[in-house]
Image 1 (tube, rainbow, N blue to C red):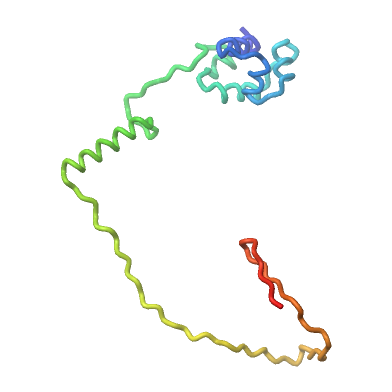
Image 2 (image 1 turned 135 degrees about the vertical axis):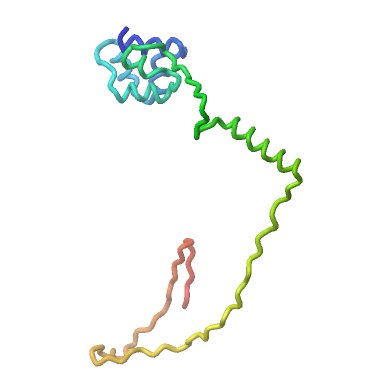
Length: 160
């Protein structure tokens, strides 16, 4: 059985026609058509897309034709870092019930200490540095008519 026949078998088991199957795995319908007609062999990218969409299909079976079509879940005896969600929920329920049985109350809330704020006098006038290199502008008839300030929250303020 070649890769084309294995792809056809997945389509048959999943009860999908070629258009739906191509859309499900994210390839062009023409690409799948060329594969199914024997014109092209499936690329590694197409095989990866099939395996990504149909996670229960065995990669060894799809690529090499070895083993069974579907993956066999291996049960390990030792606990792993990736326990199922149900196990984690059961463990947390057990911890809560143990706390209730032992009458352990929650710790007192943490209190924040506040420090007195020291007031720093605000300097209201700033003297411009005097430098012989900055030419003094002649007094002109130009005057500022409007200033617009744009803020980061997309608002603005006009001053006349």
